[in-house]
Structures are given as C-alpha cells and as structure tokens.
Image (cartoon, rainbow, N blue to C red):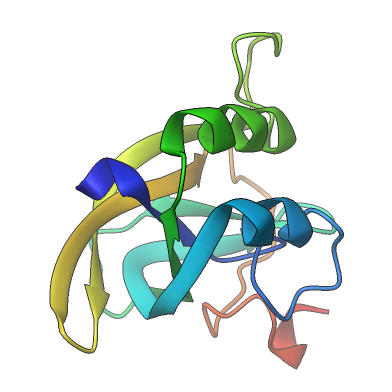
Length: 134
C-alpha cells in the first residue's frame, strides 16, 4: 500500500505555480496534508529535503494516492532528476519514509535531496509555499 502513496513538499504541491504539478494531478488523488521529520533547504527555484534526527525539524506537504504508481513514478523520477537516464550524481533519491498525518503515521514515497546541503539556505518554516522561502 505504501508504494501507492507519495509525499510532496515543493513544486508538486497543489498551490505551487509550477506546471509539473499537473503531471501529478492527472495521475493521483490528493488525500490530505502530512508532515515529515526532515530539514528543508532552498536549492534553486525548488526545495530539497534531507532526513533529520531533530523532532523540531518538520517539513510540511501533501499526500497523494497514485492511480498507476509504476508509470507515474517513472515520469516523476525524470522530473526530479533521479531516473535511470539521469547521470550521477542524481539530484534526488526516491525512498519510502514514515510520515505523519492527522490520522497517524503512514509510509509513503518521498524525494530526498541527494547532494550536499553545505551553503544552502534553510527554509525554517519547513513549508516551501510560505513567504519565508523567497
């Protein structure tokens, strides 16, 4: 079941202005908000998230149920720079991680940043769509 769920926290969120959201919207159903214990960084026009041991580091995002996980995840892997066709080092890696919703913990796919975060600004709110990330 977890392979049918995807957590997004940046340019794939519903309120994002990025056209890539429509790729996700066509192939998935929004199920609600969720949180991940991680640290968010501004990489460019997009964020990157890495896991954190600090419970105060919370990333806010959305959970989607994928209609055709295999096909959609391949397309999203291309978008996130981690498909088989992308040359290493890949920007992101897709992993199953534990997330928290208002109804409890769930496991879902998440794209984690795969390069060094040294020198990248932290998005303190953990919410890429808030004004503090500009």
